[in-house]
Image 1: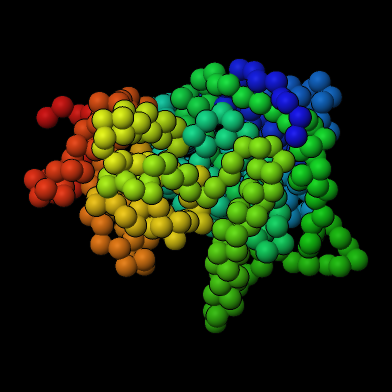
Image 2: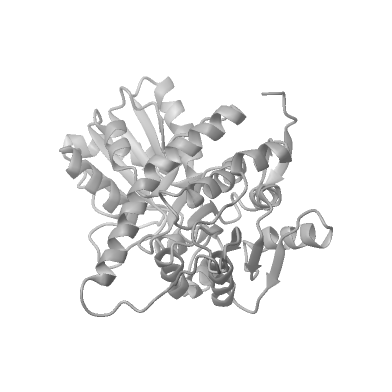
Length: 395
């Protein structure tokens, strides 16, 4: 590994450059804030002749993913990007892409859903896609957004997976803020992702296949869905395998779950995406004061790394889960449900405090992180009940 020059870039710039280095056969996309500069940047790469991609500027997100599905089924390597209402508009086609086993890679700039109208970051959009059959990755930084995008192609196209992958980065905080980054040489990326060789392309007339057939009564539909479940289960191993390979090439670590300070931690925060930085910063301050605290950040959310989460939290006295979306009518928010399920399967009886944070781009502060760690202590002492709390709203 040679020394690489560090430079400043936004998360969207890094994703666009990752796509450029992969050079997919087709990109169909529709711009939406805060994803816009990804597809804008890629369109410029196309116009400048830096890629050979067939770029399809469609009239809506529904059409974008529909075109991607058609191209992928035909045998093309395909990428796209979206955000918020755009991802919601794609919802019908999300299931089609995974059900047809199309290994599409799509970047999502995580953003609030209307109403009320809000263009800022939270996880309301991506959590609506968590049960659609797509693999999902969360980036904390612009650098991770770049790395995740490249790894995603290997995972999606793995013969034991063949599922689409959503690589997500938080709106504005990661998509638009400048960060310190490094980029691999173009040839390094091309060698890593390799030449795409589709297994069952529709355009292979010597080996005709059908796609998206009608599966009606009987158990035919269930058989399809069983293979989809098996593929999703296989994806966890694929993420580890291909992520570790990329880590060896780049020198940047890859883990399904980033566990900081958890070996002896009494109190742990579990969080997704960009706000993990503030959680770790406050945890370091408390560590300096002699308090045993840690932070767990899943980098892969689908398939959910339940065993790794439980292992990281097994010695804790109490755990707080910070969700940037809510699941209205459910006892718990999406990430909390996953963590609690992981604990149950592992036989852990660790008490869990639930928090809703940062909706619509609301600030997630160090004081809030300190409040969470304090209330974990109170939970153990029996003076706090751990029920869902919207953090940062004054009573």
